[in-house]
Image (cartoon, rainbow, N blue to C red; front, side, top):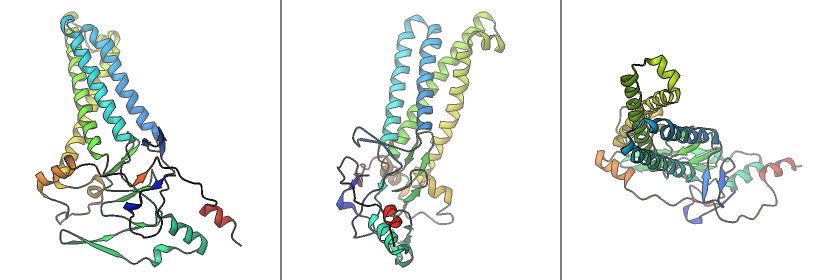
Length: 308
């Protein structure tokens, strides 16, 4: 649990406390990761293993006067990819604090406060938007926000939950997600190019066929195929997000077809949309994950079990 900055309350005047039960914290709240680290671990191992195979097996066939430089560049690209991966996976994506006061009152009274809540409507660029009430977090969500079923938190400007990173992609870490995609694409293009060059030289020098390549340098062939698959995946992902940025949509909005047949109220034109996503500063976190929290003497679940 963590305390909340009182200056950023959402949809209520009651005390708000963040319930971040599904998150994993490191370095006293400086880093925050999602509840499913398996995908992040697999992605990290894939990048490190690709870099190691390239340096050890592909590097041995590179021209001696250029091999050192080529390997150093691959190592720098590896560090760049891993750095972006750490940033996107460990930064608060934009978690919205829960309104725990309503949760406590619901447990005590046995009612559902969502039924008594009045509807809230706001206007964005002349378009009326109805704010949705989250029955789990007990808040009216800001526009473009959604509740992530994996992390069990409402997240601001929710794009999607990425299983390969193990984190929500949203308002505060979307830019790092883009730089991760671009850097990973550059890394695998680099690795793929020199791996193909090595196999071409082997075939040209020894007249070997595919089966002999598989026998003599299986690690290079595997790296080439894996890099090619990664390039196709990352290229498609990058093009999709270029489209989303140009139209100022999130992946979630596109999937739900929120603005089919009508222009998005958030669309500011291509240049305006790019400026908003790429050049506007990161907003501060709504939750202070490093703050000390005094344990409560009772919890809603405990209260419900002692009712008479």
